[in-house]
Length: 103
Image (cartoon, rainbow, N blue to C red):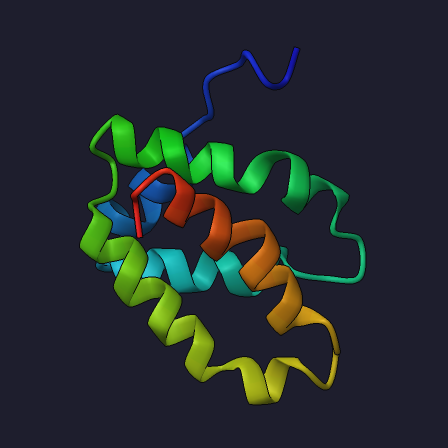
């Protein structure tokens, strides 16, 4: 099952180690690429993925917080392509991560 499977961290490691991106930049880039009109995968997997990244010390809480802040700065541009993006971000990322005391 996908819910039992541990996530693959290769993308994050490549962005950080090869491309030299900081944790918050990785979070922002990743969020920018996953949001679209189909939120099923986001709803099902995104928080679990970030939870694993945090628990396995791939990302720090500060990376998530700063990445979310950077991503929020992009919302005025992104809302043109995905009008409900602010709602998706709150419902599928921020609230669930707050419940886990990660952000």
